[in-house]
Length: 328
Image 1 (cartoon, helix red, strand yellow):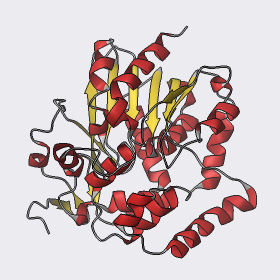
Image 2: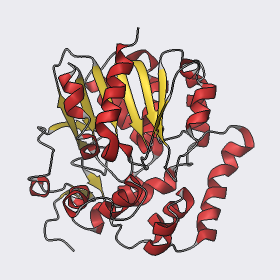
Image 3: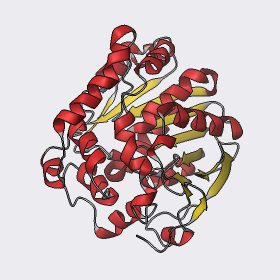
Image 4: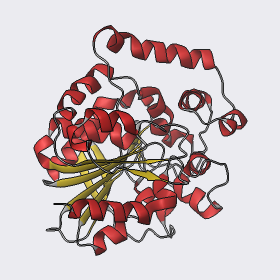
């Protein structure tokens, strides 16, 4: 176990600031806000009167994932906000997986949007950023102007499927059994990734980001692997990364309710999925077909990108956001 542990209250760890010293390409001043009894970190760059761009990360990354997108967005005159979810990045980290739920993350992100009084928001979401951000949008639709989704989804079902979907998922994980790193590397499918997350003793966060960032292990050099490992000195800090895959289908009925709002959403909605993501490939079709604001639009396919496309194609995505915001 690390000697750097900083338990600020029973069951709550805060990563020491020294872990974030000298990270490559991440010169941004940290900002903090108290929400839900925890300290949350967020990047807030650009003019305060600029159009708000909200960048939401997923699992097991943090706002560092957006380091190549923030500067060009700021240069275009926008205010860029990139928060760290509870349990990730520089935000506080409950040590129990039971402290995490889909709804709690939604409530926390909504509280951040309200606390910063963000309006006319352009939101970019990827991975868990979509599961959380789209639920926030459903609760506060008037605060959002446009949305870009990348390599994400919002699984929702009503009726009987809404009740049995999560138990069935847990059964599939049990059936999958223990998944080794070698097996995950050979086939990083979602079900295999979820099973791996529940059985690995100490999740190698940086290696995982590298594995699916470009579709192969070793895609990131050691310096970047270290940057993604920085929030997690040891396994005690990793309740968030461990439990989030398990929670993906945990609130199917709540997601279905959010879809009722999304199916009435006529504001601009753009998909920018990778062509080589083993986890969400093809998921853009549901958004394009079900959301009015996504119809009759030239959507993007990011060629040669894996799951964490911000890592390998950040400037291209930033340019797409800028052009999207310039549309009449």
